[in-house]
Image (tube, rainbow, N blue to C red):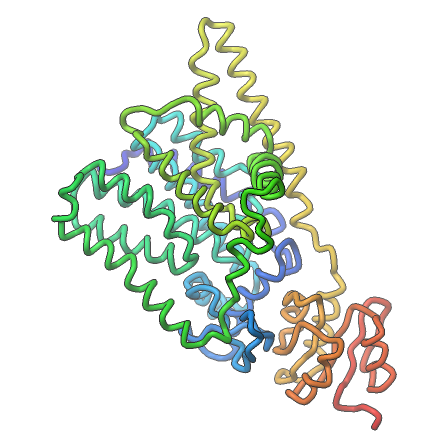
Length: 478
């Protein structure tokens, strides 16, 4: 058996330990932290229901151009990634109705499953203690709890990355073609959800080289694995390049503002993200203890090659990592492994009974600090800071025809437009006359600025409260 009954039991406990805290505020509307990205992802799945299941033509709600050159996007294409996450969510929407809780539960499931698979992976290279602690830390890390329920493809991406490394480990141990095929399928899923998954090529290459050396170039299953990994991804990239209007501009992600290796770069990634937010001080201490502890013969350089690949990603995509905290989510599994190694080193290898008791107490203290400081940092992520967009969006959905096109300015954030359950635009101002020519029928605003006031005075106000207003742009004074 690949996994004995005891290990299955541990997997189940770790899965449940991860699953339960991720149910916190699981019914949150799409208006919490990173609502703009969650709204776009949620809209793609909802539009599969409203407009038909077209995975090769994923659409979100906005006509807003995604590309840097401002090319029009009349079809509302959304080619940020292959919509694998949306396809998994689609059956729940189809059979049970369009409710964001189902999309969140998909993320909860895969994030929780990652904790269990991480345990299975680590036990092949390290002690059972390190394996269990790795899964437990992944399960309870506050940063990971929030991002384990977001409506984004990232939890699925992280799962597929850890699963790839586990399947590659089985492959090099047993030399079965089946494991090579399975690993290739998992790896291409990892790349299709996020192209920077290519950095896992470093630990994969290390494992393959350590097992077969130069002979790996003579193995057919190596080429099968590489083909399965790369061919679907390259085909997808070729395909979406035919539709640049639906692709995000990415050049800024690399080094906009020449931020790479500046003081701000290190401050944001090392101090603000890894120390304060992700590993929350206590976990960061354990992480460094695990780093300096050393490696066993079975571990070799596997963990370090995995970490190095992610460091290369953070260096190459410098501005993207500084801008978006969720870009560091793939760092969490390997970070939890080093935290586990650090805890074991601190707790188990003191000299004498009292030394071990003190060290163990310190380890527990660091974990408690991680939980306390981590929760302090992420608790606000769950908050709905602008409930008026939900109230206004529900009013738009109730008071306008289903085929109406809406202008819902919200600083280019799609969250407000998503709440209206309509298609339209996420900016207003001087562009409103242009949008009216493009078919916009209504203006919904939660900001009573000069532009909103102008259209309120000129056109029919359907409903107005102290927080929002809905204006009929087809009933205006000449």
